[in-house]
Amino acid sequence: MFRWIIIPACLLIPLTGWSWGFYAHKKINRIAVFLLPPEMLVLYKKHLVFIEEHAVDPDKRRYLVKEEGPRHYIDLDQYGPAPYLSLPRSWKQAVAACGEDNLNKYGIVPWWIEIMLYRLTTAFMKQDLFSILKLSAELGHYISDAHVPLHACSNHNGQKTGQRGIHGFWESRIPELLAESDWDFMVGKANWIADPLSFIWERILQSAAAADTVLRTEKWLAQKFPIEQQHSFEERNGILVKQYARSYALAYNRLLRGMIERRMQESMKAVASFWITAWVQAGQPSLALLAEKQFTTAEKAAFDLLQQGWNKDRLAYICPDDAP
Ligand SMILES: [Zn+2]
Image (tube, rainbow, N blue to C red; front, side):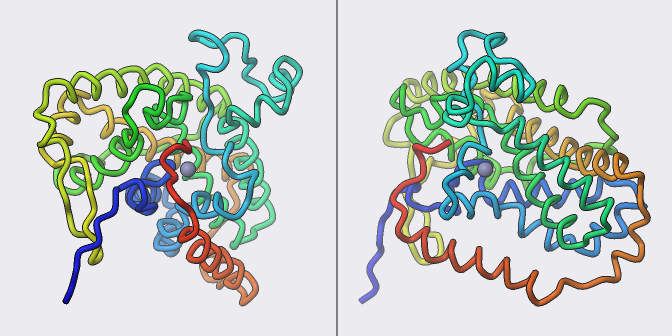
């Protein structure tokens, strides 16, 4: 006889994740492609599925590579009160002021985005199809993570305030419920960014400023909303999952006044703008011929390896919700 297996949502890695959920990351990269100028669209549209699918590779890699974790967040509250002036914005000065170990401990997302932008620029210069697509997909991931308030705060899953699960609630559950049916992703064209590091710092400071609202609002709602109606069980791939209930999610989203939709929109535009910036910095090479090329067998094998590692190691993983 068939029996339901009930597991908490925190055990379902693809549903909760450590960053925007898998659904949102893929959606952000997908929409970002359509914000590009025609000279870039010729390549990116042809590889739309790749750019979308590989948006989540950095999260998959977190199971396999120790250094991967800090690239997705920065706990700004560890550097005193806003605007965190004890933390210089440039990497060199931040290392001098705070030490590299501390920076790695509390997250390095702004500087990792800077590195990825440099690598993507170089890939454009070399006309290296594999690297352009891989780095574009992954740069999209880190930029999107920088837009998530709980990625800029050490209380990343409400573990300090009795709100465990709020991370996936904000970034996975609500986008999955609303993005397709209710949200508008006509966000206009993307543009070249003159000062990418300042741009991403501005977005991260916005994230840090919003973290308090994300946490406080849910705390308030949890006290007002009937407790037995805050969670529900839903079937996912034959497994019964305990989730935040739809009505509770809708109420939370209303109280946040469009914050999640807005951050998704801003992520999309920022991702496309960084891709454009790398291309412009590389001298705007023509991508038309590159669009005709294919991946080599060795390049394809590298992705298979990551997927195999992900399939194997995620099963051994217990609960990612305490990680940002
Ligand atoms: Zn991430």
